[in-house]
Image (cartoon, rainbow, N blue to C red; front, side, top):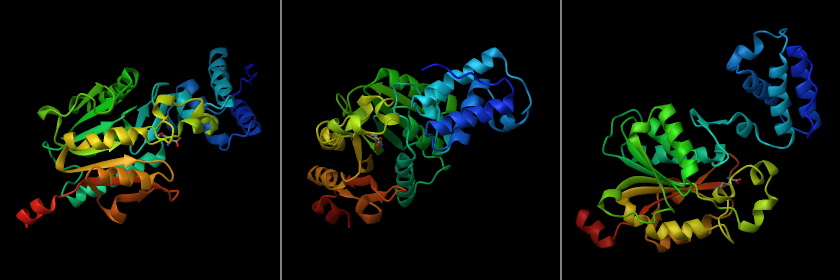
Length: 313
Ligand code: GLN
């Protein structure tokens, strides 16, 4: 795609970028223009508004034009600027990690609610709690939770070593690098000895798109998210089938697992959980909706054996 010829006057250039974005059907042209131009010129926050009459150099114009061309080709802003806000922090992205979605913040909400119900509250020191994130990607879920609980430690697993480099860099930059360990492996393969058991919370946003549906997704997903983070096999449920039967090896007897699921997958995933000896915990039997009203997260705990329950009561 040929790059635009942009005017050198800052304000006029901004107007021009907005018009171009509008013309190609971008839904939020003003916001996108501001983010692209701020990134091109290295401006943070309100600095964008400080010198509306400045003149832009050739280099600056080419940085802007380059980003504009990528946006016009459908690439999401978060990919172009290499950063995405999730929960309370900004996470760096690379082409190797899924762009974290606002929907996935539901899992953080659920985790905080269920931990609070067990007496664990953010900002209090619990150095005995351990969290595990399966398919950690950019680390957005695990790092967000570790930053809520100042002394908790965690393990993040991903099959992609390149994704783990991004996650480790995010953890370090956001200040919890010393409390998290990242392991490159397929789900729980090779785990389950003494050392790796006893997690109090397992969170997991696995790939859950049906293989044949991937090309039908919106272009910003289909073309720019890594398919290994999207493709859940023929019916989208392969990762749940693989992970759920292995969970009891890594979860503490009272532990909580929280899964993200795709639209309409709750019935089948609940069945898998029940077959593996898990019961829903928390509101609506462990079913939680996202802001659009779809069941987005399922929370469960190992079923208490009736015999054990009697002994304890
Ligand atoms: N939520 C993503 C989407 O619908 C999919 C991410 C996933 O498979 N976990 O595009």
